[in-house]
Length: 314
Image (cartoon, rainbow, N blue to C red; front, top):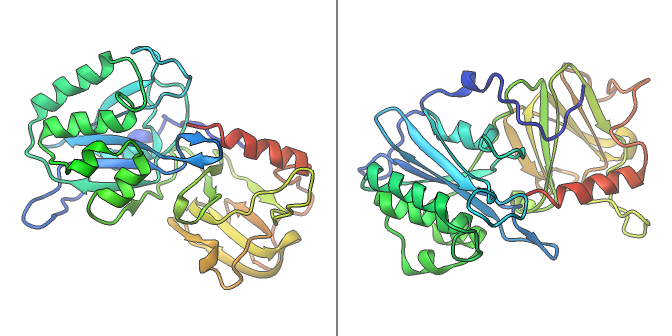
C-alpha cells in the first residue's frame, strides 16, 4: 500500500532516544531551530518555515511551531502545537505535527546555546498559543524568537528583525545547517525529491508502509509539454533502495543511493534525473524489478497534478 504524506505516529516511540551530547565551544547546546525551506510558498517563491525546541529538564525538550496550514488566523486555528520529547530532532523530523492534522517533516536544524530559563520559555509558549496569527508579527518565526529569547538565546538585531524564515535560518543564525534524513516510523521505503538544490524548495515524499516497488519511468523535464514536468534537483534516500537513472525508462547512467544520504543532482556524474526506482529489497541496477507493475503516475497529467498538490503544502 503506497501512502504518501502520512504521519505514522505508531512506532515513533522507538525513535525517541535521547540525543548524544554535542558541544559548541565550552557549552553544550540546549536549544534548536528547525527549518523547512519549502514552506510559505507565495507566487512561486518559498520563504521557509521554522520551529523551535529547548531543553526543559535534564532529559527532555519542549518542541513546537506555528504551522498555520488551514488559513485560520485565530489562536485556536493557527495550528500551534508543542510537545515534550527526549529527542527534538526525531520529533521535528517525523511527528512534529501532533494534533495539527497535516503531515510534514522539517529538513534542517541548527543547534544554539541559551541560558536555560525553561520556566520563562514555557510562559512564552503560552503567550504564543494565545496570539492571533499575523505575518509578520506572530507567525512561525516570531514564535521561535519569542520562545528562545525567553529561554536565554541571544539574537542580533538582524536576527530579530528579518521577516523571512529562510533568511533567518540560513544566513543569520551561526553554524552550518544539519540535514534531517530520518525515515518516518512504520515505513519500509521512504525517499524525498526536491525541486531546488540544497532542499530549498518544494518536496515530494515517496513512501510505503509495506514491501513495495515505487517507480517513475520518465521524470525528465519537458518545458514544451501541456503539463510541464518538474526538473527534480535533489533527493534523499531515507529507507529502502533508491536507484536513479540519467534517462527515462531506466536507461543511461545509474546510481544506487545509500539509505540516510542525499545529494543534489549536480553532484551526480550525469547531472540529471530521467527515472527512478525505490524498492524495499535490493536489486541490480541493470534489471530494476518493475516488470508487470504500474508506475507511480499513469500520465503526465497525473504527475503535474501531484506537483501542484505539493506546492500547496505548508
